[in-house]
Length: 197
Ligand SMILES: Cc1cc2nc3c(=O)[nH]c(=O)nc-3n(C[C@H](O)[C@H](O)[C@H](O)COP(=O)(O)O)c2cc1C
Image (tube, rainbow, N blue to C red; front, side, top):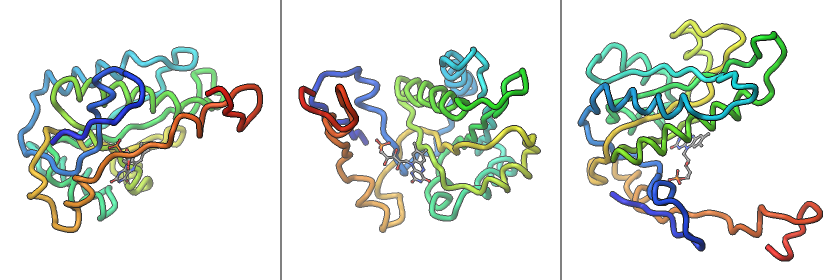
């Protein structure tokens, strides 16, 4: 299913087409494709080129591995993410190599994730980011070091049929995507001054 952004100004088609579906086809993307998504993430910019991102991924072809990651999601996400062929957790290294705190680590992980999402869109895949997961469970399951933090879980796969979702999720899947207007977040001269935007 397509759910294109309704834009007021022309933008790149990948941004228009990316969205966060809950209905996934069970078709598993090939390993080359999955690795190309991490390649896209790899080329994100980052503060001092520290590249503070790591990704852990699980494929439904390995049911034990898949179940372990699925079990880290909150039930509200697990109920639909169970159908995605790939689950991913993005992790931030919160210190620079120098040992100082990296205040931009989560920002840079976000940049890498958006690269991944757009690359996925370009290959006919869709990815749904999720904050709804148990951080401590992820930390324990994967032995994530103290100075790293799980930031985001992602469900990834090819689009599925809305009718395969639990009934109470079907309306949201088809609902229009919405955004604030540009003038609400774009200012000149002083905070909140959107005259001339
Ligand atoms: C950091 C972050 C956390 C999110 N957490 C969840 C989540 O736990 N469950 C969920 O269903 N969607 C989650 N989403 C998806 C958002 O709800 C979605 O991106 C937003 O509604 C805009 O829709 P779109 O991505 O289709 O444009 C999350 C997105 C982001 C970026």
